[in-house]
Image 1 (cartoon, rainbow, N blue to C red):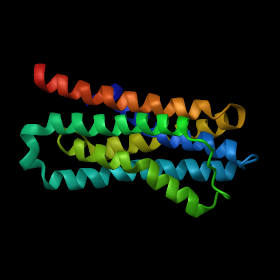
Image 2 (cartoon, one colour; image 1 turned 45 degrees about the horizontal axis):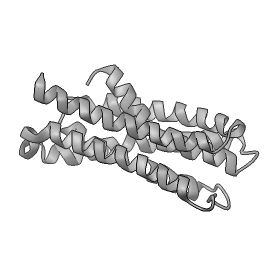
Image 3 (cartoon, rainbow, N blue to C red; image 1 turned 90 degrees about the horizontal axis):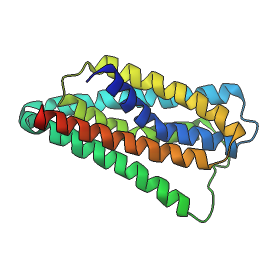
Image 4 (cartoon, rainbow, N blue to C red; image 1 turned 90 degrees about the vertical axis):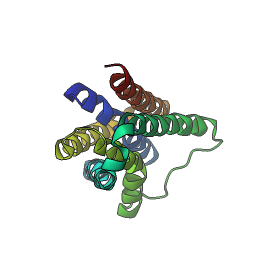
Length: 188
């Protein structure tokens, strides 16, 4: 996986956390910088940890799935991306906005885990590919951190719509990367 593909994968994975960061800043007016940085760091750490966990699980079964690795990556990334798009559309159709009453460390950690589950599945697909997991996970963590810091800044200035479009954009990126992996393995 080349650097550009890894960047777009990291960007796609970070869009859930970005959208939550935008939402947190809009729901919690006057969110201080320390809390915004702690939230961004939590999201980055979890987005970096989950692919490593998925990779370890996937490597345990690598020999059994090596002939199907490109299909596994395609299905997982397509499913994750499709779910992100569907979740965003469902949120658009929701009647009421939901904001946590307070942005406590427990809420932040719950959000960090929830937004990084897709990175766990991506880690499983990484096990089927020839990739340096430490580099990939670190890159994903850093991109997520930067996107979340930007999300907090944007959330202070713009409406909730941006966050929902970010999630759709992230889903489209993941589906496209999955399709690219499949096409490369089938035709090149």
